Length: 157
Image (cartoon, rainbow, N blue to C red; front, side, top):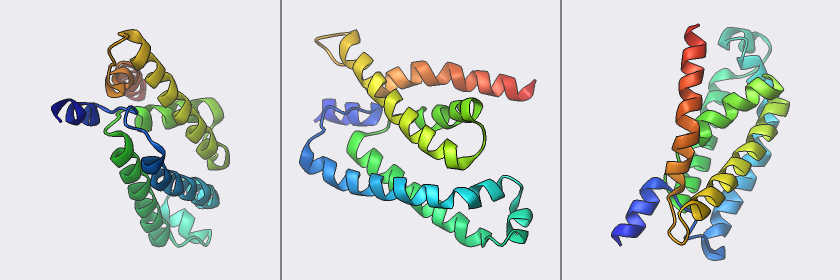
């Protein structure tokens, strides 16, 4: 039980099974289909809330929808795989640097890059200390912490 709790706290895909996957898949597909429909509103929000209001978007409703959608997606992912840090911080920033700020491109790119980084981190976690398994959260922290510090230093410059 302690090993399971430790791996959940640091993140692991080891407990993945189809019965546990279906609820996550339903939520993930729902979020992945809903978010791109709000790309225009998110692009308008980049200009500021008052400008988005002037463009005809209901800013308060959009913010509420985004908070609920994010909470639902993150809650389902954490319930299934545990706390895997830095993917949600690093990937969107990296994708914004690579593809630009347009959410019509940024959202699908972040989704695919986040999934790819998670799979790569899981592969490294399983092979690095084989036959033992390293929690994914440690691998993502080793990748994400230096990148996040780079973003902080770059932001100050």
